Image (tube, helix red, strand yellow):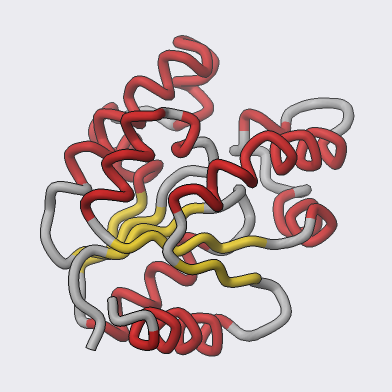
Length: 173
């Protein structure tokens, strides 16, 4: 049986929210998405926050929300792709639960996010290049907090959920 909090990290488009929602259902836990929680608390979209406060303003809000959520018990939390940029957030994730890194290739991430206009960091002339750059910067950070890593995109959501549960059980988590 999997115990404690489960936190999902990884790049935008890796499936954190989709897998997280199904994982929470399978384990009978509450599910939270840090981006949705920020929108709920502020009453505005992530894009609006980026536009008005810049990335730094958004990251400060994100750090506070994740700090609050990681103190809850027996939850599944999908974090934003850049959440791991904060030292404090990485510490909170590592110390307050099991961290699952969902990874995917740059090509898969591009295919999944290319039509989504609600991703401020991809509103550029070269979104494919931006994804590759973000992966290069962030992959070591994702790996540094992860208890397990699962590559998404090759299998169904239900298979990904089963695989996460199996890996956590096998690691004694």
